[in-house]
Image (cartoon, rainbow, N blue to C red; front, side, top):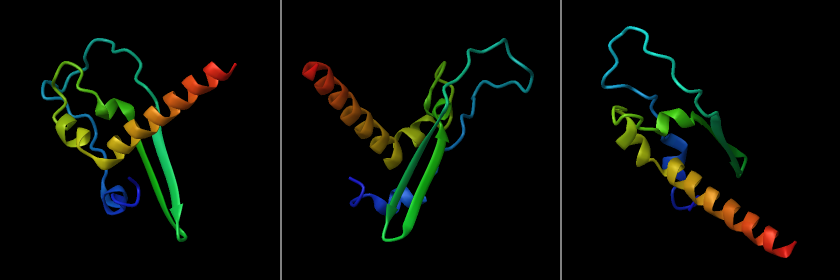
Length: 97
């Protein structure tokens, strides 16, 4: 996946959460949001470092104007693939105990 999508992984950036319903005034207290996610790859002395806030990938009440854009990014697809691999590894390790 990395090799076939390297150019996109180098160039893509997650856009910040942009609310369609934001009025410009403070809203009621919101729940704390998850942390950042970071990728770091090194190939032929060329590093790829990407960091983004997981909140920017949410759609909340359906008002994140950047949700569709962010959902289509290769790094988000890679993130999901990595989560699958880690979950499978954890399940395997639990069966071994």
